[in-house]
Every structure is written in C-alpha cells, then in structure tokens.
Length: 179
Length: 145
Image (cartoon, each protein chain N blue to C red):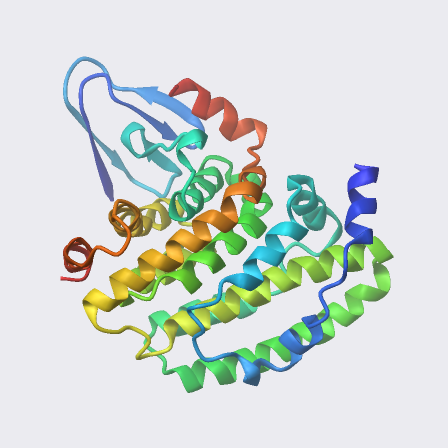
C-alpha cells in the first residue's frame, strides 16, 4: 500500500484540473475523434490499487451532485443551455468544497483527489458532449467512423485496462459459482 | 413489480444469494427493488475484453457488490468516457447516457439492460472487415432503424 501511494505521489498532477473545474463554460463542443486524453489517464491509473486508494483518501465522490443534476436534467428534457447553467452553478459549489477539503488532506490525498476529480470532469465533459443535439450524422458514415474509433480505443485499452477491473471478494465468489 | 421467468434449473443472483429454480418453469415476482442478475446476463471477467463489455462488467460488479459499489466508480467513469467519445450514433449515445443515469441512481439492473444495444452495436462493428461499407450500413440500420 505504501509503495502504491508513493507511486501516486510521484505522478504528475493533472495540470488542467482547476481549469476543468472552474471554467465549465469551456466545455468543449463534441470532439469525437480524439480519445487520446483517455490514454494518458489509463497510464496514470494503470495500477488498480491506485484507484482504490484514490477512493480511500479522497472524499468519495466530490462531483456526485453535478453528475446527478446533469443526468436528471437530461431526462427531464432540458436544453443544453439550461444544463450548462446548472453545471456552472454546481461546479462552483464543488470548487469551494474541494478547497476546504484540501486543507485537511495529506499531500498524497490531494494528488489522489485531483486524479479522481480529473476522471470525473472528463466523464462529465464527455457526457455533455454526447448529449449535445446534432452530434449524430448520416447512418452509414456514422457506423464506419464508429468502427474506426472503436478499433483505436480497443488498442489503447488492450494493455492497461484489464487491471482496472479488479474484483472484490464478494462478486468474485458469486461469479465463481457460475463458472 | 418485476417478473422474472425462469427455465427449469436456471439460476439467478438476488442480493448476493445464488438461487436455483427447480425442475419446472416458474415466474418469480419481486415486490420491491432488489439486486437481481439472471444467469444468462452474467458476464465472466475473461469475456470483458472490449470497451463496451468492460463497462458492462464493471456495472455488473457494482450490482453484485452494492455495498462497495463506489470502489468501481473511477473505473466505470474512465471506461464510459472512452465509449462516449468513441461512438457517434445517436441511439448509442442515448443508451450510454441512460446507463450513466441508472448507475447514478444505483439501479444497476436497468443500467445493464441499457448497455445491451451498445454491446450488440459493438459486436457488429468489431466483426466488420476493415473498409467494408455494406456490412456497416447493415449494422447501423439494425441499431438505428
């Protein structure tokens, strides 16, 4: 555990986390062609223990409210401007929470928290982009493009992701029954 | 009320307990919400080797391990981000957003169900020979149409 924490501590802190958190107006228009940022995050999280310890040290889910509001607003049929305004408001709330938490966290904890926040911000941004109207296109073009990007994603994940899927004891024993 | 039809001898997981049906066909009615997973919906880890099936597997872990579901959140979000940026077909994006919504409300059974069309779509795309037009149209039409 100690060595894992040391590894995380040595990792480069994501530089754009403040930007992500405090400038939601910069949420990108859909950039479907570039899953490259994900590759970098896989590398940061290549050890499954890194994920676990990020949870153990950092507040469990700092952006939970933001995500929940976003998803509910979408289901209620809100337009993207309304959703963005809502995100602006909530992310600024999260900012103040996180700053308060930072004071009480160890240096390692802050890095873990940033790592966790980075994942959440990327997730929320991807979700926003996906929900923008007009991102779909002609049927046959879409399938071919999707296939190409899927191949890229598949190759990126091949080496690094399987370790993320480490299973706790409980589900492992249930799954074993069905083998 | 959720009704689950069971074939003779079919098994299912209910809140972590593995139950097996007897020798006759049966229907089980669930009067409240429970963590249910049928045998035929179970994915073993060695099958989780594609981007969409990995997301399915992680959500399945959340269902089977509800008390510790937050352990799997970072993995879920990371993998889901990859899918959201990869697929452009609108019905698939909608299915992914639905999945995220159900995961957020801890309704993992529905989250898994909403991933079904994504798995089918992915299987179609992965079976394409590179650069083949006609089959990809077919695959897209099946999902979108």
